[in-house]
Image (cartoon, rainbow, N blue to C red; front, side, top):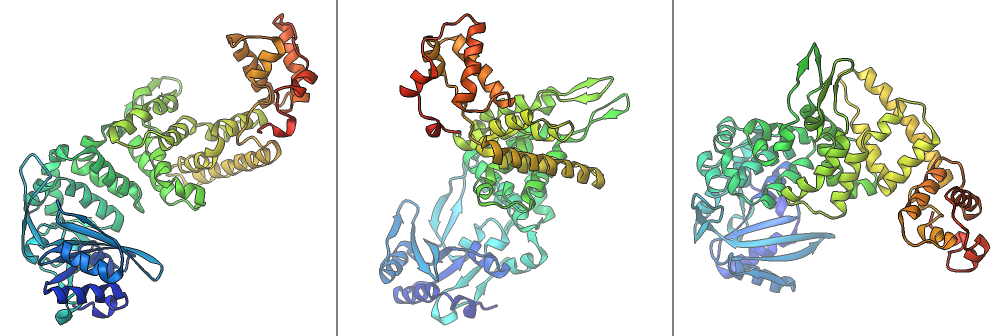
Length: 500
């Protein structure tokens, strides 16, 4: 099979071929680029293996392109970036090598090798294919393990004995699941059996590398498929035991609850296949999916049986939110705004759904708008995804109710501008009004005013809210030190300067 015509569409390959011939070395594009080329998938990363110095070839290509070459002598690799048709290509060069491993480490002992050695060390047959970049056989496919056939059969298979492949680098077990999930491929039975036998080897892999593969599974088109493979392979129990705890159904007096493991995977798929693809949500895509994965994580810890109502999980949203930082820390995920986004969605995920089951008051809607803030769209997407049932009509009924809640939220937000709500009655204003020091009483007055504004008793303006503040102060026996007119002429911001 020859890919000459396809490669010639990108002049970078002809340039690499020319420089390889000038150096007298054999060069091949190999791995993921070849796989994606056959599948017709977009790819911007090119891996070039040469029988000689990859660094020397990279420097020659970089000189011809007049671009910077990053050299990593300890690894015998070099990398450069090149622009073609507005596409930013990343090209990595390495000399062909063979590897051997110690049982307690993923770090290989590397030696110079042949192309055959280099292909033997690859993780899967579909990633071991190479295409020649030399003029004499430009575009010729080198496929010793029938990777092309495995692509047609949609199979993930190791090029050598899978026990050896996974023992050498246990992260390849996660990669097998990841590729299966991304490409909707099956894992070949002998390869999957080896993962099941060797899943304990994942313990020698750093948590960062495991989580990187897990994130790619989470971002795959149907992530539940990847998680089911992880579960059946015995990997999920080792890397994410909290999720395994969701599995199973308990029945007492003929009353059972849903299997929260499979429910969670359905919610994750619903998020992955939602129709709302707004840019703001797409920027937070990974973390929205993490919120789906963790929204019910504390249900096992809060599960109780009540003879009247059956199974309950009271408070699982609050406990789950408290667990989020610990899970992120264990997974080596970022502990900044992404974690806080997930934590907020886990804590609030029942609120919008509860509003569909009762008479909706503006007060309840205001509180949801204020508590969700800028993350309201993500919360609503999660709540839509959380509506799951085998009964199609039941799901549609809940979704219609949810549409009604969303319309009311939108109308209220347009009217009251509560997305980033800040009460006009601040702690500073309270202290100046009554000449109070920072104290519990100031906090109590702030809370009273906040609730009055959210309940719609007064508007969020100084002129409307200040009389209520004076009335609450009088109830507490407080003396007014400054009137509103004095405050307005002093340090208190004017009405139009106040954040809303």
